[in-house]
Image: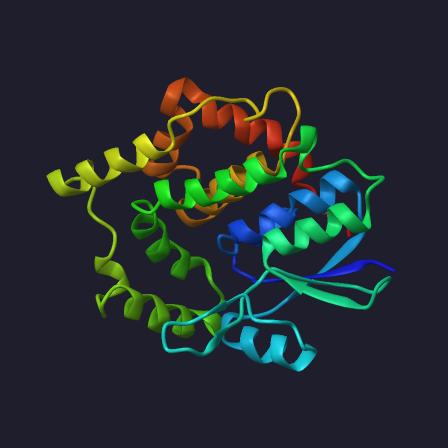
Amino acid sequence: MSIILWDIPSTVGPWSPNTWKISQNAIIFGISLRIYALNLKGIPYKTEWIEYPDIASHCQKLGIAPTAIKRDGTPYYSLPAIYDPSTNLHIADSIAIVDYLEKQYPSSPTVFPHNTAGISIDFEQALDEKLDDLWKFVIPAIHKILNPASQGFYRTTREKRYHNKKLEDVAPKLESEEGRAEWAKVEKGFAGRGPFLLGERVSWADFVVGGHLLWFKAAWGDDDRKWKDVMAWQGGVWKTLSEALQAYEKQLD
């Protein structure tokens, strides 16, 4: 039987960066990892779609553990999550999922070549910190590609995160001096080399970056200036990586 992957739907298909790391069709966020890791390993899976407002109740119903604790002390539930019928286990959080897949399916290709699990996880955490300046450019665009069932929930929670600022006012305007300065910080955070981050062999670190790239592309679109900028940065390094990862972007279910 196939593994079940729960993902967040959108009008442009999978988009969540976290889900893409796992599956990689791909959402961060609807970028759906559709699941690079599952596709690399050749593990059969099928995707079931859960709208944002239903994530917590879905996880609670199935006994899927929360992935964090909110500032108010309540549990935070998130996707991706999987169910493996061969072991009857439910798992949430991309790192926990890939760790499970590595241990449960050791004969399949590894996403941590040359014992790089620790380095790859540290890399993911460092990347999230370096790209902190970028989220304000992406989050407002994500709202536009969500299904109506998720848009209200997404707007309410994200506007609260930005101190009740309207989503339309969150992203700096690139035409302004402030916007150009903020965008320059984002470019600096992407400084690095390709095509794969560990050389000729694909790894979890590549899936982390690739999941984010797919998220940005889904949010902005091919013709957006910001997407074209990212593809041109560092002499096209991220364009090269994006193209190299296409082999792992076809869903296997």
